[in-house]
Length: 193
Image (tube, rainbow, N blue to C red; front, side, top):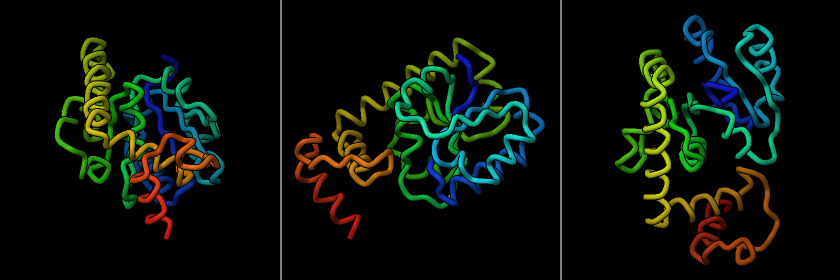
């Protein structure tokens, strides 16, 4: 893979603050890892300045199809606090990527994430990314966990709702044409009210 870590995010203030804080506080040990950042967060001046001063960070900008970027990354990062849904974490897991996350990003995940979602500490990142066998196991665990959520119906409904709400990109088709259940469409309407 081209990147050790991937952070995919919107220009949300919590995403920006979380990333800036994490990189600044951990710059010394993070410098050994290649970090890709994609999404509208790349348009923010402080993020551009961060990338200008850290040679291990690459800004990819808005990416239409995240699958290609996930395919070039070993694992993902979610250092954010203050946002409610675990969008970044769930999407990464669906792509078979383990996640190094803030406590807030982990809180509220259903049980079973322990082998694929870790606190974003130097020890955890170095241990997993430095061991190809352990990384492969965590990637498999990520897919298994996402599949378990999907089989329970949680992930499919949540992903559809998030796409409908424009979190991953606005989908202007009607809920039924997107394959959302009536329950998901109603939930999306309730959230936007």
